[in-house]
Amino acid sequence: MEFCNKSAVEAVFIYVKRLNMAKSDELAQIIIGCKNGDSKCFSQVVDMYASRCYGYFYRLTGNNDLSDELLSELFVKLVEKVGSYKGGSFEGWLFKIASNIFYDYLRSKQRRKKLLDVQKKQLESEPTEPKQSDNEQIDKLQIQLRRLDTDTRELIMLRFYSELNFKEIAQMRSEPIGTTLAKLHRGLKKLRELMEG
Image (cartoon, rainbow, N blue to C red; front, side, top):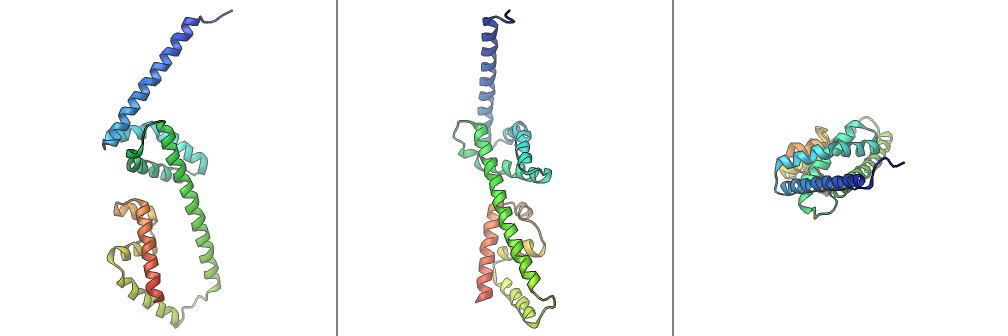
């Protein structure tokens, strides 16, 4: 006994195919709008993909706050990189960026863990009372900090004295987090050279 005839199945298939084509055409128009800087189109992309991308990050991290942070970073990257989208599967392209963001996070987490382990070992082996040489080092640090350009000095102060994280500093300075990290890295290298010189 047949529940539906062949023509009904074909009609449903054609309907689904047309529906998918319409969605594909609509997405193509939204992406063109994004490439032209249309904020409404970016909002549409966020509305379309935020829950799926959040779910992706949450399944990988198991952490709500971290998933929110990675999702925010994803949509910042989308704004920066939408011009490089050359066609094909937009979802594949978007999730490739999401994957890269997640693996960047894992690499930075490993670096932070190694750095914290080294700092912990140093603190455990150092005496707690500052010596005269420590005070001299602090004085020298103050002098060398003044020799850095204002922008670099501010970055170092925000990170190590104000204890802001990189994301907060980048947002405060209205620049990508990668730019902030690169500037801070160069600044610390310069400061180290001044301290050793």
